[in-house]
Image (spheres, rainbow, N blue to C red):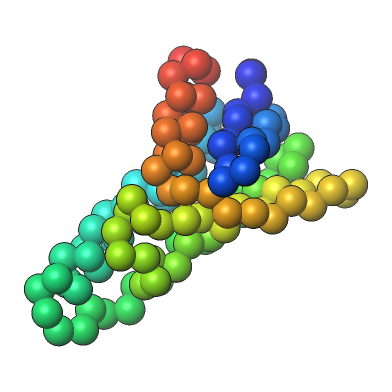
Length: 114
């Protein structure tokens, strides 16, 4: 399998990732997008929206990947950022990335892996 490349706010990271894990990550991100849209609609409709549960995706393979996002602090999916942690026994990388860009990266990887 080709490695996946995730484009971060500054730079990118590439690592081994299975298509099954990519589909799981994509499903988690799509759920987050739906939640963010619902929060956005509730905010524009007046009143106080119900607090939503944070997205916490974890995958353990050759490296450990964790993706986190609190949907209650972002006004829309287009503004949302994900906190990404990627680590193994030698290195740990924690950074932010744009939600829409990561979703696009995952979709590109799935197309290439098909």
